[in-house]
Length: 310
Figure 1 (cartoon, rainbow, N blue to C red):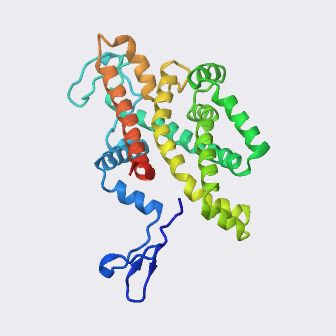
Figure 2 (figure 1 turned 90 degrees about the vertical axis):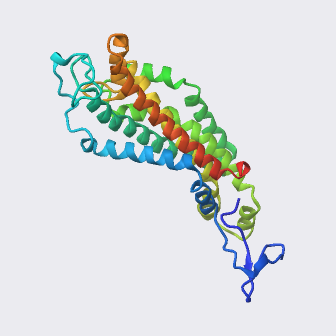
Figure 3 (figure 1 turned 135 degrees about the vertical axis):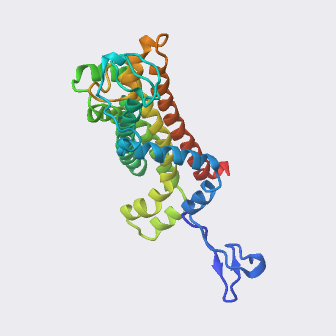
């Protein structure tokens, strides 16, 4: 799909379509790009605003958790072990006597950071290799596709258990790097298909016939029209990566103490679900709301960027 819808404007101010039909009323019709059309569609979706507000809130508390939680998530008192909600501590305490509210707020930082780093890394790596395979084709397409299939064939959860059990540290960087290594092939497949489709369009063939260089065709004509599906998949994948980090931390191979993570807290609370259900309720609820927000945003972006759904 070209970036803009071509139109002509007569001297009298009457807009005409490419078929030569005048727009009724003689009003000037402004050409709109794919992205302006997408924003126009998004601005009318309540789901987009709900997801956007939730994600903005999560980003803010990830950067400045002290705005709504003034305590220290590592400041624990065994005298408060498994004590329920009380004044000043609305979520109660965990087994170590740590304030559940404070740990839930501070836990957003690690989970959101891992999700954003993994999504950015996988999107850049997948877009580069997938775009290269789709644009060059031939032997390069076969080699890159074969490499992607090798990583794609490794179950990411099982691979995480094996890989992160060997690698010590359990830091945000370590977990994110592993998830990028196994996450890029999915986006590479999407990028390859989008580039192959865009490369076959008439406006790209016309640019090629006029002598445009490969770099100009790729950057000016193909890339802008191949980004839409990559953005959609990356947005939805971000929520999946946050959930995966929590799962790996729950299994004891992801982030490790003293890191504060929803997965770590859920793991610690799983054995005490009958005695102190509040320990599990709040971090699990925060994780569910976060994943749901990114899935809602991805669905809204998909509906706006996919012309077949209009």
